[in-house]
Image 1 (spheres, rainbow, N blue to C red):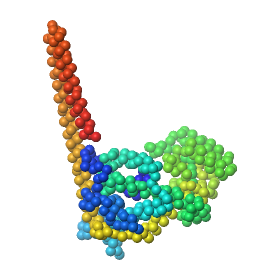
Image 2 (image 1 turned 135 degrees about the horizontal axis):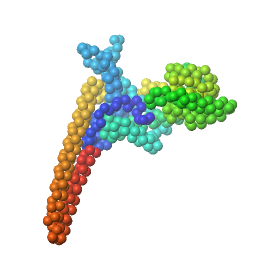
Image 3 (image 1 turned 180 degrees about the vertical axis):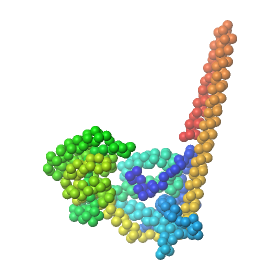
Image 4 (image 1 turned 120 degrees about the vertical axis):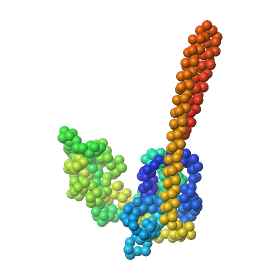
Length: 450
């Protein structure tokens, strides 16, 4: 879920919503109205003249309140006379936890507003390709949450509609386009080689690619046998020999990429094909130490860690694609913070009167009602299945009785072929009716389950 509200999907669903809960909720359902009594389209504040609605803000307030409550409530003693939300942030401040949460949610909502506006000014938008990618990510998210119903319940529990959630997600795509485009060579914000090198030094950042041959089973955590380790070591030696035969730096990195893609067993290769950018303590010690001992563009020997055998190529931050992406992302974050700090935010009376404690009480009650309705729907589904099973059993008994009658009828009708034929027709019609009744009941049960 790379683009799906990177800061927002922090709340996992523990209960999958049962059938029927969304019967009154189409694509235009409004959880804000259910919770707060006013529409999700209600404007709570403006950012540089752009409206921020209740739906756009309360999503972030729910996220911030959940995170803060789950963490900070554990730190408060049960005998405290002060309500959780009225607790002071610290002894030297008049700001309460509620104040802090409300402001943090406003900051997120304001940031999304200014990023969307600035992106449009720079010519970046939510494209048809982005929408297709969103739909792919959304399918994965729904599967992880437990299905369509669980996803819909998640949105309702976070005070947002499906349309509103896609709008928030679209801003993440715009942000990515800005990272990719605003810092390209020739652009106003494009970094120089000196900028990139200095940024790496100031933040103690290293850049490297590696070929990893594992000497442990990453599923079980168990070491491979000595014979298997020897095979891996021999392969690593052969790969290193091929690389050491190359003297041209450009050709070396090209060959390294070729061998890395074909041989590396690093599970992070797919997500980091251009290498890793890391600081002290972020990698295993053997990997970090070996990288620090190299000059940019230099190749290591065989480096052994608890994971296996590494061949490392240290990269120059001034020319590394992975490093430039990180630099661009960090610089854009700094710009976004400045945009928010400088933004003209004007609140409405509805926002000013919004109590975090009241909102969270209502949100909690609403979530409880979702779970209660889900439990009731599940019980009804189970009852339908039980009733269907009883009807099927009764139909089977009736069929068995009918078969016995048919046998007796056939025996008594040996002297009369015409009567036997008529009885057979009646028997076929009776069996067909039993089958139709059973099929109809099965379809009803299937629809109830769906």
